[in-house]
Length: 467
Image (cartoon, rainbow, N blue to C red):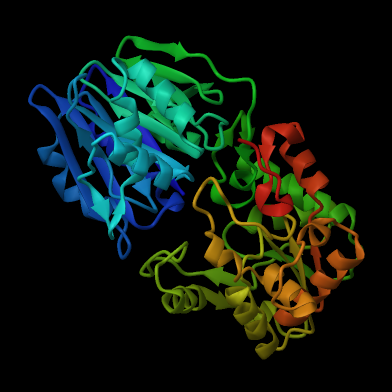
């Protein structure tokens, strides 16, 4: 996925950009970058963060950076920020999202005689494509409007200019942007959790397709928000940091509400409730409180020396790191019936290993409650899963077991309570070795978030698409 952070200030902003960007480290594992504007132009630094954290790569460089405007990015895709020379002047740019019609835009640019200089692994940098679209117009407002109209999928962006920062949320608002204010400075961020410890207070959430311009004197709207929104519901379930708000709705509160909804439809008898660390914890606390069952931690996460396992490039490494991070507590496992809440069940590989460890340690029963419906469709908007990895989703594997390898209509399996849905859930339960398994109903997830269903993107669960 990825996250953005930008600052305009009357004072030097380097440390704010550094720490604000670092607060987005949970959103990506491949690249980190920051750029600041000063009297000499734009200073930039980009590092690979696959085996280390953002701050460890950039901290030693901070004394060389100076400026009162800056942007930063955590990215799971291309190196950023880009520095672009254009008829509008030199500007820096960062983006998050996924341009699904990238190939078409590139081919159309080639036909115009355009070329691209920044490639990653032989592919065109999506941020450079977005910059190319902006530069086709005479000013930034028209350029950003043109880019958002041409791009399918999603692309939220920050554009750093000599005068200030343009912040643009993607056309359907799939990824959030929020403005924060403090004395003598303004910030714009993907995650509102970046604000409190830097002294900013949340002031405004950008609407879908909205574009604002920020300088040290304040901010003003340059393009009004569109009427339709499809913000990613998975932000509240999994991606988002618990202290963040999207559309004014807090992540941890939604996770607690999801746990309550799971408990409302459940009557299984267990000794303790637990959450799969970390994002399952909020769901489990809600469940435990609703059913008045003690919350315990039979798995404790050890993180000080292990690299992140969010989406490492090596599946083998991801499984090793995940296994080494979670340390079992025998006294809370042996001879106990346990119920775990998990944010979601994706491929199930790590979860199956964790369940086996519980039985190796003498657990009597392991019940699993997933805070969202089964993941069955590829994410087309945020690089969460590619069409190839969708075949590895555990729900899709079970469907292939039931239907064979031919063309299958997946939609009946997404209908909670249907015969095919129940057969799929039983297949997943069996594969994972669970005593029982239940998933959240989509209507209960939507109710837990509190936004109208038509303003949420739920494509990965029900296959719905909006462009």
